[in-house]
Image (cartoon, rainbow, N blue to C red; front, top):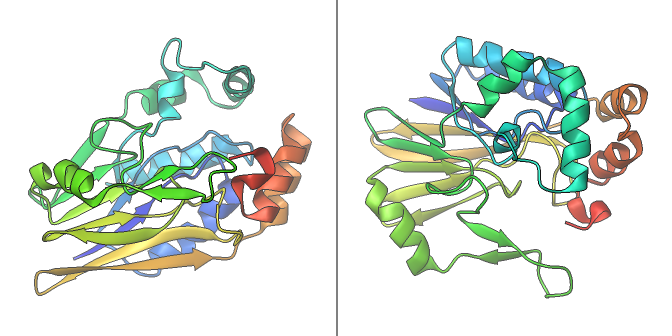
Length: 248
């Protein structure tokens, strides 16, 4: 059994197209999309259409915190409202409603695989790591392992999938493999390549292969500059491969 996991596309169609080429070459049995599909400005309509096609072909989906911004009153900051107003010019009401209605969690393979964007209870929280404020000495803070066990253990899954932090990585909690798939777009480690994760189960044991895929970053930047009011921010973010250019 081979699972391909993507997360945090953030409306970056060129990055997603490169990931899908790499992913399809591996002929996975199932694709799982962990959310934050379109909140970005590198052709989000194209990114949304590609992800909808994946879902129609059988991919499992959960909603990210940015899908919840399509809920009434879901945009709280001025920047979020500015993005929302622009996204309404890119995505029709049906596409926005589809994203808003995605489930918080899904299970697959008779419950052996559990997927969420953030934690099982919230798309806004982080399962493996939490963001650290600037000046506190570290970009991430690991969740206390006992607290992680309290969240993961009751799920009774062999694999728990999450995203949200844009940081690929994995750990074991008892007999459960917990995997953060990384992000297709908007990296945090200084490497701007697009990320996805291939999981494989052989003789009852799961392993995770974290992939980094080059893509036409400048095409993404050009699209954002020509078609959105966020072009310069997108250019700085994607080229740097780190959130630091916009303060976390």
